[in-house]
Length: 315
Length: 275
Image (tube, rainbow over all chains, first blue to last red; front, side, top):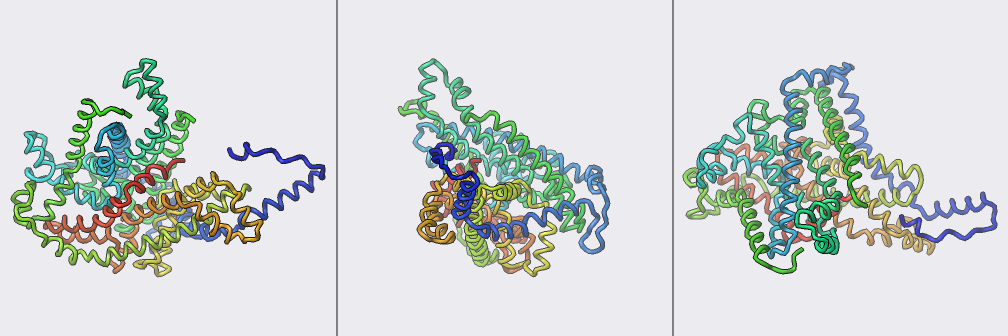
């Protein structure tokens, strides 16, 4: 952007190749040497690029960490879709991701709209709602494991009983049909404030004059939100959807700490299955195949979201 | 934003406070349980503690070995942050001031690392770290965090430096300073706002990370706080008062830092991710 605003360089009579030469020498003199990037590139290559590339190769082998590595083609992937636990983990991961993306962002947006008003407690509330996001997910999972405990008079069940909703008491993490939704609940509790903070930054960027103009034109509360606020929130929506989707797809800590994938395999996710395949069963090839599926999902979702949501953004 | 504080705003205020109270219920449970003895935890789990006891905290501190764990987390977090800021800012400066195909290609290569889940390279990297004898060491974790968080760090720095005029550094270069001096003395101080964001986002991630420290440090003397708490909870799972005292102690340091720096932390989280 800035370069187009600079005045055009004065035309010189010097031959074009000499001018180009001088310009190139000047640019080289002023631009930093390659070794500025070398240490970062070396560490990045060692820790991310090389392991990821070999991971992609291992995904097509039967490597178990000890013996030979044999190329087995797509066997690991057919195994993944034939193995009930693994296929279930894929379904769970997708369900969890959808629930987290929808509810966390919905709640985050409502909180942001509530806080971004004239209420006196707005600063305190912002801190309260955001605070869980800075605590380790493992610790939040242990806290919620207790809140979800099956005893009828402790935690969430105790509260339900106390307010006369005893009929709704559940074995939140022990019921195979309920476990992943309970896990989604703890993730949403922890990170709704994070979504809120990003929405708040978006709301603060909406000029007050636009609202005033719309109000003078007779737009109601909802119309102003729909036609003024919402379009201008697009960048915040993009960021929030990306963050929560990727977070949901990679979910590990909370599941590992709260249920370890149980009861049975009811709350297994891609990350817990690939962890167990690698470090419990030693199926390194199979584990990296699952990681590759996860990577493809993350990459695909990021690209689709960037593509569609960028179109909505108002420059 | 409403200017007048009317009945409507007051109503909203009450609703929001009610939501916050409900939201804080798990925290209430956490704190009250940590103050109860085992009998009271079982008999009246929801009521406020009848005779609060701090005994759980003293026990949790020693049995969870939280002292050494806090030291480990601090060393790993600070060393990784120093490495990330040094390597990330230098690389980003190169990438944003080299308008060549090489500069752009390298930038895209770094961005790729934001999308790649680290699980893809998890096993090869584990083998590498194991082979180098770095399992159970600070160095292994610091190397891991530096590598894994560099793409994001480079991304943040590059965006910021691109919006910064090159004139300051150019003036220093023309006055005879070398590139190293021009960057460290002139450019780097101008990066303070984004360095703050880089620091906050990476610090929270590294401090709370669990998966990799569990793999690299589990069972060693270098366990970080989340890994130690995981082992502690597993060991004393039936004693909720003790477990919750451990959770409170383990969460306090980062919560305290957050409360002191809340304005900056929230701003960092809200702004750091704008593409």
